[in-house]
Amino acid sequence: MVDTAELIDNDFLRQYEIKIDDHLAKIEYSLQERKIFLTKLIIPEGIKDENFKKEFLTLVFDQIQERNLSVVPTSPEIAKFVRSNRKYKRMLPVGVRI
Image (cartoon, rainbow, N blue to C red; front, side, top):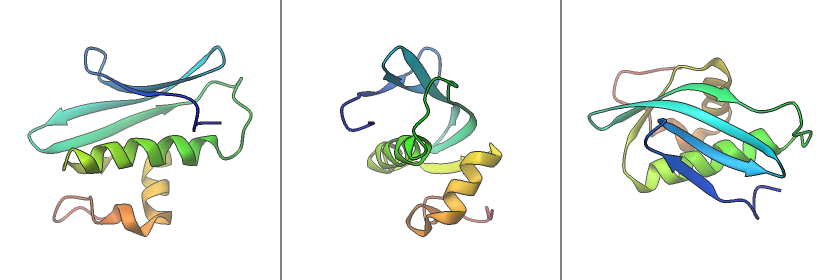
């Protein structure tokens, strides 16, 4: 489902966006120095695919990794994703544990 959609980093609104059919899923963020704080995950009720959240977060984390930024997940749902995906734990800044 996510494979065919384009991930957009909307700098103006400070959010990652992906449009599926007529629904817009987004992750709001705040960028400070070399850290990106992922503050809110919004997935519309119209997106019923159970794997969507994981695929969307994987796309976002991969793009952040390419930009060589540290990640501070302040949203409980995003923190849970990091805990369950060991490869993204190394993206946490020194001293941050979740």
